[in-house]
Image 1 (cartoon, rainbow, N blue to C red):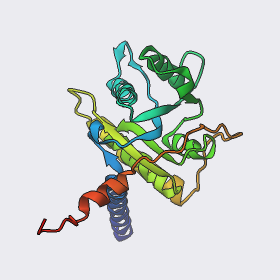
Image 2 (spheres, one colour):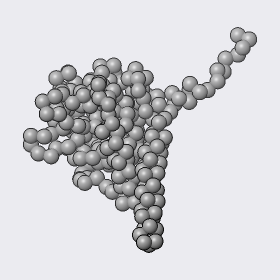
Image 3 (cartoon, one colour):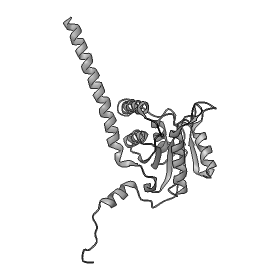
Image 4 (spheres, one colour):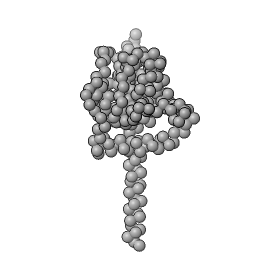
Length: 239
């Protein structure tokens, strides 16, 4: 009986440690990424490339607001002159389900030239989308477009791989509690931690490079904007 009691206590301790670890990873991911997230689209500096992370356009017969908010943000960024090229990364599981092509059609309808749109059909997971943006499409200074919870995990992955990325956090769906999504995200972050630090997981597919050709630019980075705002004024008080 004593052995059974000790066994139950051990299980309880292990469960508590696991819960604390999951919580700690979740908070660490948020902390690591907080300085590279922008919530106001008007504050986004100019980027040559934005990576739009894919999701299903419809949930049944209902438009998926996770999708529409990302696409609308991409269109607005182009119209504001803040982004010139888009890498649309998502799942292409079968002919009737093609996230990159669906996003491309909506950008084309909005008047974005086809030559400014690039497709990554092998963005099966966030890790694949972020790593492939650098290794396959040869871009290392890009804007990610997705919801804030997803921004944090995407940036966590980017930072591990020494990828220079910023994320625009678009709105969550209206009238959506997000409890189910938030719970799923907590475990997705734990998986991301193990993928990066334990298993060294790589994208499912790599292949030859498909560089996105960009022009030299003098755009100001997010870090430079923050530094400028933090610097004291050098003006002479006597003037």
